[in-house]
Image (cartoon, rainbow, N blue to C red):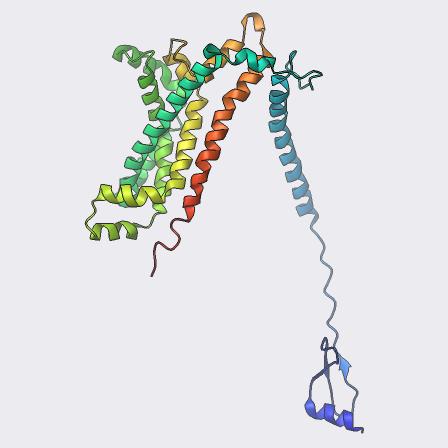
Length: 318
């Protein structure tokens, strides 16, 4: 037996010179490297593969369903002879935008839309905060029943209540009134806003309010100085939700506002549909582009408040 073999047998398990595979040395034998056994091949399930293909095809259909109307909107707005079909204009022009950029067709209706939608969203957010605070902070027996009741109120179709609402507005003298229309839109948006606001308020730790109460703050002061600043992302979500609903609402202003000077852009878009089925498709597309831009700008501005979602980090210790 050689000296190297004796040393290997005395040392026990050794490693190879490169340090990659372990070797086992037995006295009187030659050490051999241990190679790992190959892993069994893994076969992909045909069911999962078919599911992925079906999901991809469904998403592609949904994407096409959204992109085709958007493509028609952008192309028809610069097409002097736009039709209902999606066609690339041979000579793009901005004449459609020049035709609709007038106070009667665009500026006044957009201003009315801003007033109605902004006031509706502001009133709804304030009232939803006051309504969601006791539902979030106080445990009462009828909390769950009350939440489901107001959620049921948001499921009622607006067309089912417009006849009695119209009669009520005539009786109270609120017909053709912007404040009356704003209050009604805020009332219809309030159930879902309260439900959403309550869920956002639950994420604010109550221990922060308790610390404010120890320092002598009242419940309303704690709500205004502690809870509301910490749930700014939730406020932004509810505000955008209510604003977009009021911005695109056609039926309520169409029924309750009779003066064309008070009607929002969602109702004035009806003027592009002429008699006997004649439609100014190019001007309609140009007005629709202008009509959608303010909402996109508002969404981008309010989205910056989402940075407050990290405001709770480190606020509670121990």
